[in-house]
Amino acid sequence: QVQLVESGGGLVQTGGSLRLSCAASGRTFSKYNMGWFRQAPGKERELVAAISWNSAWIYYAESVKGRFIISRDNAKNTVLLQMNSLKPEDTAIYYCNADFRLDSFLPGHYWGQGTQVTIST
Image 1 (cartoon, rainbow, N blue to C red):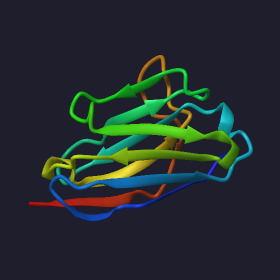
Image 2 (cartoon, rainbow, N blue to C red):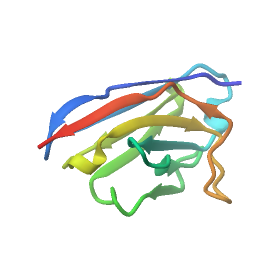
Image 3 (cartoon, rainbow, N blue to C red):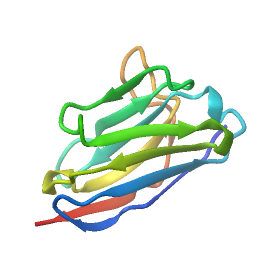
């Protein structure tokens, strides 16, 4: 199985950048499709970006397209989310997800604990 730990969240001003990291402990990380989700107060958890196990397929939510970049390094068991041109509406807890389902766009069974991202005006 796999355990996930997110890091890199924090407080930045509108227009700033953050890079989130998700470190995986499982030996089968390289076989998992991965996703980044976020959840703001009072809202449903939503998919932000996803990447296939071999990085051949990448998805971005329309709200972050052109601003965020998802990538992975299977040798380091790490998936990254580079967030640029941040907006107040990006404020949320961001979660890493393993075994993301490319066929249904539903999350897999494995979640990290989340990392808080807050964008100030």
